[in-house]
Length: 368
Image 1 (cartoon, rainbow, N blue to C red):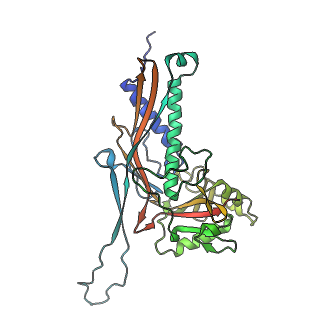
Image 2: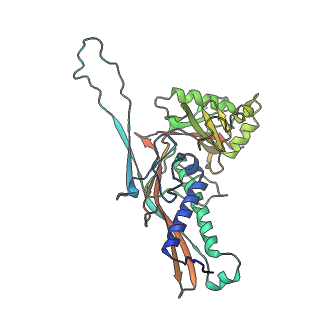
Image 3: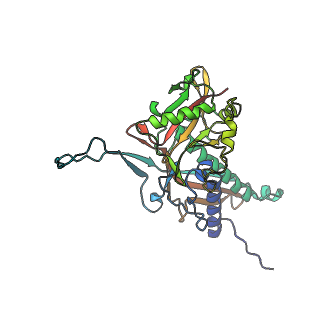
């Protein structure tokens, strides 16, 4: 019986592995699979990036997949203010000027490679080391995407060491600087239950934080744009597991029950609701283990996040061969040693206009 064999380095293999690796990495990424919109990658076009509207926490921009350049600019227009003109008073000469601010994200290539060993190493094991190498690259890219986006949203890497692929000294890439939250977009409750922007004064997390947070956002001069799902406005709250545990053990009547009863109920078909802890008021809650932990004053603090629309911009470029992620295979030492690599051109940045964060607040809580 004839058998079709796709050899190492074959153009079909490049296509198949590029699409497979790209699709898996995005699907396994917490941020890209849930916070960028369900049409981010079409099922009939799994190897291609689609742009998204600014209605989700992550806005995906694909302009650079079809055009040259290493940066994308994003503009925001501020609301006009002041009174209008009444009756027959003259309007001419009293027009309001349009005011806008610009932010930009740079893109850069990132690559990773795995050695599949020599011919005898591959012969001695029952495992297909080429496939194992591919799967390891899948997992690495998914983790790399998540960690990079997390660090940019928080503006810091933190001191966490377990589970991370990014070193604690990692300070960003492509010239997109890390920007810790400004004072207005920093939120915590102190030991007396009052608002503080200083993480050194943060106490442990509880349900009352969400009530206080709701009030705080409502009073902000320019609050983050909410995420609109089925006509209702929401914010996403992403919590460190310590904060989730503190919330679960909160002794307030009905605290955890109030959240759990709305798990997967409202907007269940939307990816933002999928696998959430539940919702409370206009907040959709998530637990995520890789939020940075850092030292503030004399205590350890978790950098939780509150996300509105357009909290961050993610831009992709074409990595070659009409795919966003490029798979390469290389045979060296006269055909004996096989290495496989994958690379992608992309960039990510928290949106910030006029020196202030736009769609994200850092929510600091004490790590017990």
